Length: 81
Image (cartoon, rainbow, N blue to C red; front, side):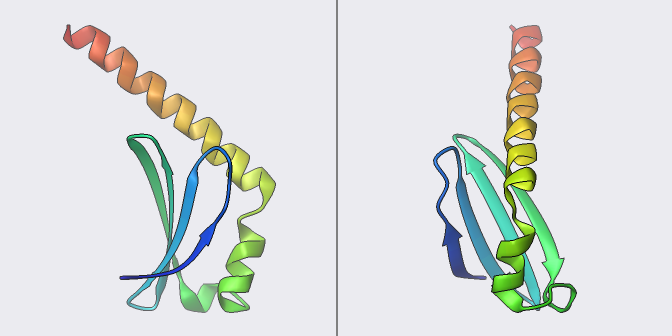
């Protein structure tokens, strides 16, 4: 797997990898991460097409998902104690 791009964002780290004819888009926020895999053939324009796919709406939805993930973990941890 090789890193082919990073997309700057103030609220999370966004890395784009290439492996086995797939793009892997990884979002990281603290200890949490989300990964999305797409076949390179499904994206018109290669990496530039992928940048178009990763629009503001999608990134905001990913950030909302991070909030939900964090809350789920906190709830589970509180039940554990």
